[in-house]
Amino acid sequence: MLMQAVVIEVQWERLLVLDLDTRQTILVNTPDARRFRPGDLIRIRYNGVMANSIPPQISASNIAVIPRDTVPPAVFPPAVFPPVFFPPIVRPPAGCRRCPPFARPPFGPGFRPW
Image 1 (cartoon, rainbow, N blue to C red):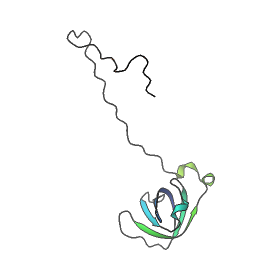
Image 2 (cartoon, helix red, strand yellow):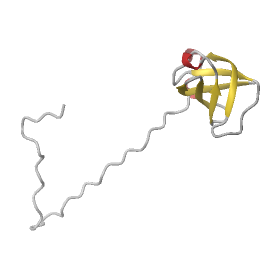
Image 3 (tube, rainbow, N blue to C red):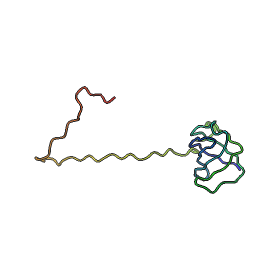
Image 4 (cartoon, one colour):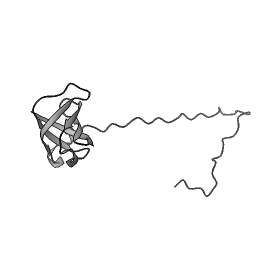
């Protein structure tokens, strides 16, 4: 059987990949794992046996890298980043007499953050 996948992580003699057909992560056992890098699009040939584990595991008989220039960009899964949350800005209402003035930053006029 053939599987097209994107390499997520390279481990010792195995790869964690994202199967492009089923969109599930699969652990691929292969002695050639060190040849690949995360982000590589690969074609995996295996015997069709998949272990019922989490994540599922297969043993590859042959793995080939598919050049990126032959693949349309829609094949690659979109990058997912964690959401960024900013704390809300709370200011006193206009005309508040008992409210302290806004605090000054704790650094002096010549401070450079980098």
